[in-house]
Image (cartoon, rainbow, N blue to C red; front, side, top):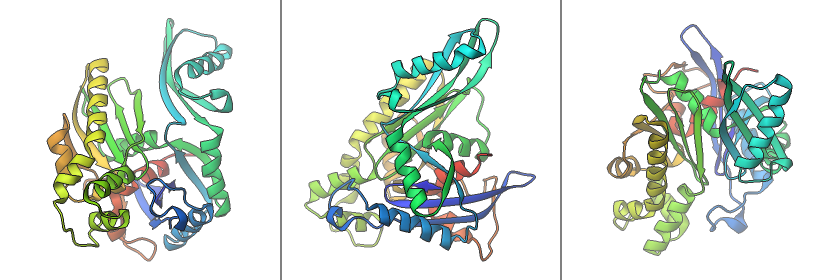
Amino acid sequence: MDIGSSSVKVVQLRRNGRGYTVTAAGIVPIQPDQDASDQVGGHHLDANTARAISQCLQSAEVQTRLAVCSVCGPEVAVRDFKFPSLPPEELEGAVTLEAGQSCPFDVADGVIDYQVTSQDQSSIRGVLVAATNAVIGEKLQFAKKASVDCILMDIDGLALLNCLGEYEPRQPGYAAAILNVGHSYTTLAIVGDNELPFIRDMAYAGDHIIEQIAAQTGQTIDTVTGILSGQQECQFDLRDHLEKACERLIIDVNETLRFYTAQEKLSIAKVHVCGGFALVGEFIEILNRRLAVKAVLWNPFDENSKFEIRDSKFISADILQKNGPAMAVAAGLATRSI
């Protein structure tokens, strides 16, 4: 269950011989707080989020109340580590110390977890994740208000990489990259030959792009949102204003891609673009012109997917064909085993 800032996405999977069968899926928008409806990134009422969760579960006819959720943003960090060989009883302390030195927040007021990826007689390598109690507690409260029991908390970027790993094998010698453009945050997730994830959450995303277009054109945010969603006719040069509004995002993504390729000495063949804002017309075309690598719209549920879709009263393939790029995080969370 992906509880975003503008919508709730739910995906339920069942393992089969080839991969997974989608047994339930749904997406429901979160109604904004009326007092903050004209503010980008305005806080939604907790009740509206809980209501959207309940409606999403009901519309998808999900019977279970056990869920895997996720967090992202400046209060979340994913870092790799490499230590000299350590006794098992000393590893947790070393990871905690590393998190305290590398995470941009006070890890004493948060949760730290880690996984060892390789170990030999001289060294030990792995990945640590850390998140503040505040950002975790917010998601837990949303779920609780909707009578959902969150039994595992994941990271958006890791869920995206898990989803891509199930979608297609990574090409040896090249890194795989995903750009998930939501409404409040953009996540860039990359993994290379060493299988160590590189995750960056950027606080510039769909809502901020909409705000910039509104400022450029003198339109209201609601009007720009309607134009981008195809519900209203556009009276100005949308492509030009959209490209200008995306400038900051494009610069941040290009700088991050260059940093990664320089550090890891790996090329990136293409960037899989997903998230709710990825569905905006001409957005992918702009990214393709401006990014250092090829950008492709990624729907984890397309005809090449290992996520088999069966039309039934529980799920319609149309939901995933239309909204699939917005549901990549939810799909990745559903691949987790408890």
